[in-house]
Amino acid sequence: MISVAIVGNGNVAFHLYKAFSSINTLKVSQVNSRSLDSIEPADVTIIAVSDDAISEVSSKIKNSLVVHTSGTTDMNGLQNITRKGVFYPLQSFSKDKAVDFTKVPFCLEVEHTNDMYLLEKLVEVLKGKAYHINSEQRKNIHVAAVFANNFTNYMYQISKDICDTHSIPFDILLPLIEETSEKIKSLTPEEAQTGPAKRNDEKTIKNHLNLLSSSQKEIYQKLTESIQKHGKKL
Image 1 (cartoon, rainbow, N blue to C red):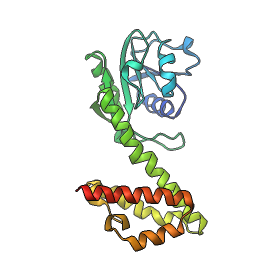
Image 2: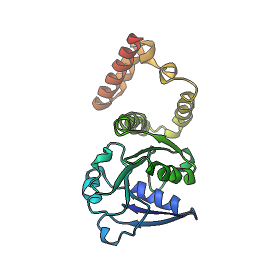
Image 3: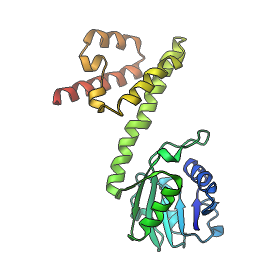
């Protein structure tokens, strides 16, 4: 039986603890990052705290293998004197939304080769998919994920603001959002790109700009210019 200690009480810690607790081949415990004096010995100690706290929290942990769940922090950002690694689940976590770990890619990195088996075993019991990713690759994956997820979600917020302003139900856009997400499973984003910027439809672009607030207009213009510049490079 593998023993796992989870440090933290944020969204990632919450979902990992919930998932691991349902697996009878694991022994799981969880502690708040301010209660490290009560941490239990464990085969793997997973630090799921904010990036800024990783260094300080890890320096206080004596367990044999300590890993963090950060997308941007270097493995050597861990300050424990024992073995180090990374257990980064590439997914967006919200406490009020269940996570299907069978669809979550895990980016794994270890200081000592033998520890990779242990982390891969944790991914296996979650039925996720493991990738051997070094710290430099992971940082680039994380910034790519910000564009694919965080920035895209903010575009949804702008869309909703426009809908709300004009008494339009936001769910009218959901089939379009779903179609775009499905499309890039079989096409590259470049192949899937449509719209007035792609077509250089200046009349439509001008009409759109007249409908937007100043902040929305600025974002629209920058994205339009970027799409058009990308098209000229091809």
